Length: 392
Image: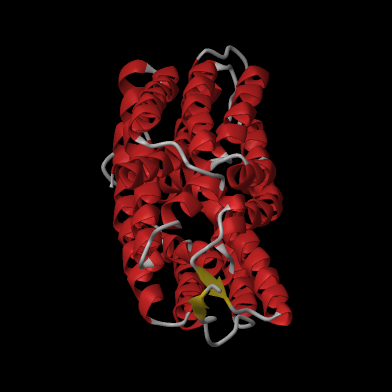
């Protein structure tokens, strides 16, 4: 139970760290002498590129070296790199430090999630709770960053989570027992029966849906702060008060986070395709409605689209849990993350210039198009999940 709790907290720290910059970007741009926040956004691209690319070696070492050891690298690496970001003095320096942080942040998903699922009886429920923890990390990023930026400056917004990550690393080192052997050398107690053609089709769908979903996730989570500033500027002084903006943003993420727990329960009861399709369809509709609204109406639709964006996240891990044996889950997860997040990091690089040239309305319509492509990809999933039988 202690191990599971620490892994949940690791997921929260992972997502919190990746979203600090997006919430504090206006303050950082001002401090570094840039006139517009959009001009700072490309400097965070390296973090998201590494979040994808570094997942491949992270997954490999998780299976072959050990997941506990890699999680220690995660905690101490995240802590040190966040403190380094807080000490930077120029846009180039912060870009380099964020890239380093992105490399360490890549460890959690291909390593921490398979570690959680090793002995889980109900994978969907565990994935759902873990997703809730990650998304509460996103919500807390908005809330904590808004408060720290207002009271102490943007550097504190990176330094405080960095110290927390280091403290959690110490607790993890002493509380989580060493592994007797690496996952790759262990023989699972259950064998998955998936024919080659189905496996190839599922991996193709997994790569497509994860890539498209990551594009939407990066566009929304990195753009929501400034999007809210524009669309709800007349609500409670959100345009000028970073703490109020952070509170409104945290409210969206906190409400939307509950979706993952519900989806996790549904995944344990029904075939993945039957649950995944309506989630993505609702995502598409929510983006279309949000594109033409503002004020409190926009806020309601933002809650809706983030609910379905978060609600789609558990399916990636559920597909891997249903179709891939534990001895190689970290490597499969690392491969799909390297492909999908490596490509979707372009969303972070393009966000500032795209909004500067076309505006947020066009961005929301673009995300609706991406959601429609995701819907098409999900339709190719098998109607039934594979059976798992005792291994001989």
